[in-house]
Length: 244
Ligand SMILES: [Zn+2]
Image 1 (tube, rainbow, N blue to C red):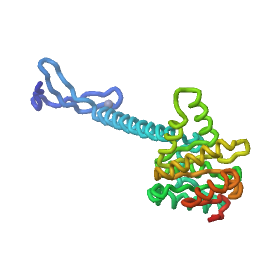
Image 2 (image 1 turned 135 degrees about the vertical axis):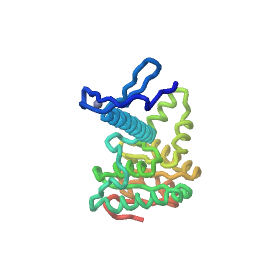
Image 3 (image 1 turned 90 degrees about the vertical axis):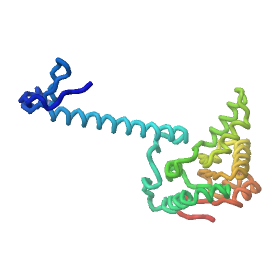
Image 4 (image 1 turned 90 degrees about the horizontal axis):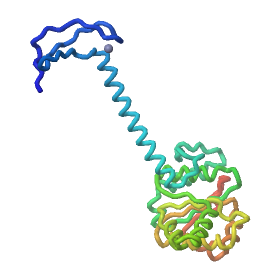
């Protein structure tokens, strides 16, 4: 429908919120149309723009939450990248190693690298490696005990153990935390060794986090498995000293 414009003189009118303004007048058939208060129009436009901005922010947030959940990152360490991680003196070396790992990630994958982060309780290892996954925006975090639990669960459901292992074996980056805890069994060490072998074959990178030192890791996995792991791997100690 066509508005007939410019045939009627402007009229002074009043907006309830903004007071007097000069309105354009038009008719749509018999229906008189008075142009909206410019201040109201401005406010409405801003409201719509803000709404669109909020919707976009919410969408972005949802994408981020989906990623964090898919990567199985512990909620405490959400929204932290390596750039956000402020290393204390003793964490600087490990932090740098992570930055280096991130910048050479494709190469780390092609080598099927296995990197072991050693360090005592409370040295910020889990936070650091969670930040690495978030910097790369790729990877999966899991505790060793949960791998065993998932495998056990597979026995009691219709899934096979192999399905559980295969899914983990194909993640581009897998971070396995709490490796070699005292209550962990020999079976768990075998499970992880098998997983690392498969991942080496699949040309994807693996990171282990442990409270053990190098000797402890060797003992936990057995010297042969350990030396195989170290053929294409490295041990990084979070107290600042690279042992290899
Ligand atoms: Zn108004």
